[in-house]
Structures are given as structure tokens and as C-alpha cells.
Image (cartoon, rainbow, N blue to C red; front, side):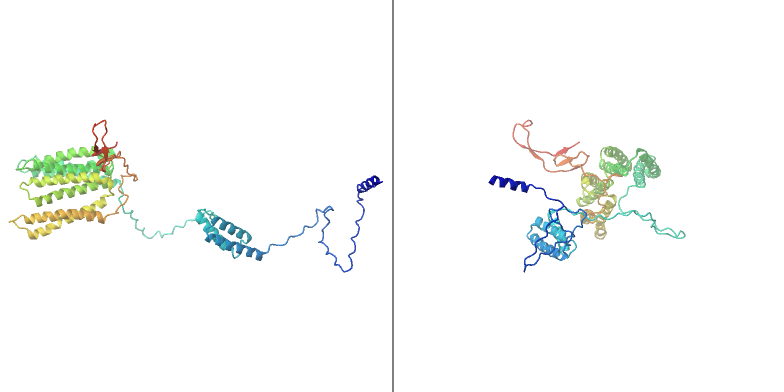
Length: 462
């Protein structure tokens, strides 16, 4: 009997539902209770198929007041974290505040916090891209009255420009001096009684011819102004040293012919050496100007020191001057790579040195006496000091003048090559000599069996 009831119940549960049967009305509420509010229009039971074309309910709009309060709280907390230097968390809260209220009153504070954190962490910020508009092709140059005279031409910038005119001037000057020296020497042999009658006109004629011919020769050889100055300085100071040696060689009765011959020989020999140096080493115009200035100061200083010494033989003055010129040339050649000099700057240095050396001779005119040599000694000492003081003031007052213009003709300035070995005097692979340092190293056991140290005096790199 029980089994039959269970079977009957299972059968009843498996009966299909009539799809056309109307749902039963809801039961009436009990007295005293409130009926539930009807659902929104269009709402259906969850187990009933929904109409896909039914109206979708509209969600409630975002509350800006609440969002601004949340953003303000986030910004306040982000500021506290920023003060505590917790940068990443502060930036995160500031970004969330901008998401909540991008245009509210707390947005500027949030952006300021983000900017500060990016600066602290080194994070680059994207700059706003500006819209690039195509430029219109409009002629904005001022309209000038064609009837008015043209304005003044702007002068080139101050400095040390290199031009073909400067090159030709340098060639003319040095060519004229060398050719004039040779012509004067040849003309001195025209007359034994009065050598000047032939020396002067021949020297002027040959010098003028050299001044006109040498620029054409240098143009054909394509020599720069610095190269011409190198050879020209060699001929000038070679002639000076040669002429002084002509006076030194004979202590009694030195003639003008002997001095001219010695000067011509010295100018030619040293000039050939300058040409060889020009082919191997590149000196700038400023380097040659420095050598000329120091050689001139040395030559005049040798004479003023001779006034202090008051030697018995007058040839001692010439010897002092030779030593001064040679010392000035060597000092200028060594110091040139380490200085920034130009012909314009050296002209001022030489002018102040000359003024300092000449000023004491004004005093000499007042204290001159034939009974004693004290006046000459005092004048020579003051003149020597004036040369040194004037040169020092010249270098000091012109410091920074033409900075960076001490370069080769037509070539940009290059960094100096400093690969010379450690020695008292070193030569770099660029051909520049300079003073180095103390290079002390232990002796090699291959060269010497005993222990010891070696000091390198001269080193060179090629």
C-alpha cells in the first residue's frame, strides 16, 4: 500500500504544466496588513521569458557633491603621505581623486601632488602637444624707399679673421725684408770707400721686387698666413743673430760689410730651417706672434742688461742681445702651445713692454753725466725692469682677448694631443714641445745590475 502511494506521488510530480493555464491570482492580504507596492512597470517574474524590446531602466545619475567630498578626502590623505615622503601611495590617491572629480575644486591640488611626486622620483611628464600650423609664406621684410641712399655696411665681428689679403700682406712684408737685406749686402760691395752709395739704392730696389714677387710664389705654393709668418720670423731673427755675431767675431774695426754678410748668411740658413719646421710642425699665427714678441723683448733686454754690466768691450752688448733673442725664441716656441695668443693681443703686449722699457730713458736725460757710469747702470736696471713689468701688464690686461681664436688658418680648433712621455721636456705626436713633470722610475735590471732610480730628462712621441 505504501509503495503504491509513493509511485502515485512521483507520477503526479512528473505531469507537464499546461502552458495555456492562467496563473492563479495572489491571495488577498489579511485584514490590517499593507499590501506590497507594485513593482516597476515592465518588471516580470524571473521565471518568465523577458521581452528583449522592453524599455531598459535608467540608472541613477552620479552625484557630483558626493564625488567632490570623496576627492577632497583622497587629496587630504595624499598630502599627508606626500609629507611623509610616501610618494607612490600619495600619487595613487591623487590619481583616484582626479578620477572622482576631474574638474572639482580638489583637482588642482591633486595635479600639484602628482607633479611634485614626479619631480621627486624623476619621472618625465608628457608636455601638451601644440598644434603645428603650417607657416604662411609671407614676406615680412621692411619696404625701403629706393630713392634713399643705402645704409652703412655692417662691419665684421671683432676677432682674428684670416683672409687672402692678410696672407699677401705677410708675404709682401717678409719677402721685402729678406730681399732688401740681400740687396743691401750686394750693393755694399759696389764701392769700397762709400758702401752706402750702392747698398741703399740696391737694397730698396731688390726689396721692392721681393715684396711684389713673394706673394705670387706663396700663392703658387698654397702657403697659409701662419706658414708664411713662420718662415718670415725665421729669416728676421736669423738675420738679427747673424748680424750680431758678425760684430762679435771681430773685436776691433768691424765693418758694415762684415755685419751685412753675416746677417744675410744667418737669415738664409735660419730661414731654411724655418721652412723645414713649417713643413713638419703646424704653428698658428698667434704662436709666431708670441715668439716674435718674446724674442724682441729678449734682444732689447740683453742690451739694457749690458748697460747694467758696463763691459769693457762693446761686443758684449751684442752677445747679451744674441742670448736674449735666442732665449725669447725658445721660450716662445715652448710656451706657444700652452697659451691663447693672437697677433692682435701680442701687439698690445709688445707695446706695453716697449713703453715700460723706454720710460726710464726720460730719467736718463736728466741724470746723465760723463764722469760716472752710475747713470747708465740705473737706467739699464730700470729699463730691464720696465720691459718685464710692461710685458706682465700686457698679458694681464689682455687676458681673455680673442679667446679660442688661436687656431690654424681655416681650420677649427682641435683638442691638444697630450701623449708626450713623462719627462722634464716632452714632445707630443703632434710635434709640440713642452715642459713636463718629474718622471722617476726604478732602473731596469737589464741595464744596470745595481738598484737605483732613473730621471727622464727628454721624452718624445712620434
